[in-house]
Image (cartoon, rainbow, N blue to C red):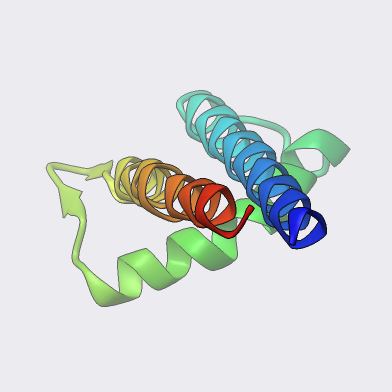
Length: 99
């Protein structure tokens, strides 16, 4: 059973790193949106194409514009923190119990 335990721990770590990376991408997109970036810049296009599907769904479900400010990145980051705290930790505890 230790193989299954190690697999679940590895899955939890990869998920944790992926969620952490996506959180920093959302932060970078939010910081870049404060200035008027060149829309043809490859970095700006990458950040927009990676974050916009998630942020668009948040904006569609919850009206998060207050006073011209978009709070959808904050909500996305809170969801990521919840997933890191709940899902990753649950997977690690499951692996400990299996192993």
